[in-house]
Image (cartoon, rainbow, N blue to C red; front, side, top):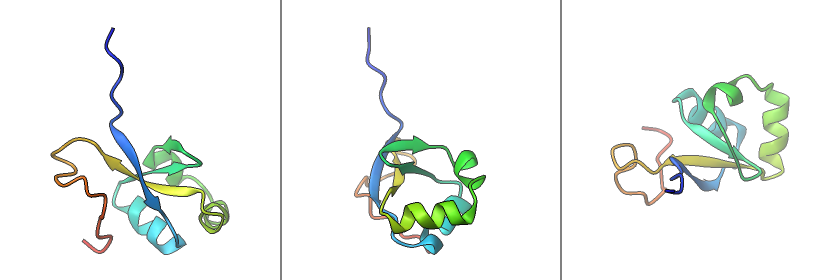
Length: 81
């Protein structure tokens, strides 16, 4: 039986609430404490919760493993694009 291939990989830590908000606003997903969190679920969290987990270093970017979504997989995404 084939093993399930993950569609997303954990990226760098999210260091500010503003970066987190921009990332989620673009429809991207995140990892919290090493667990994948879908964008729709994360967007329903209160700002206080997001601020706390960002400040404690518990959030990471989630990057797609699909080549069409991540052509370089260097995991250095420009949040301003």
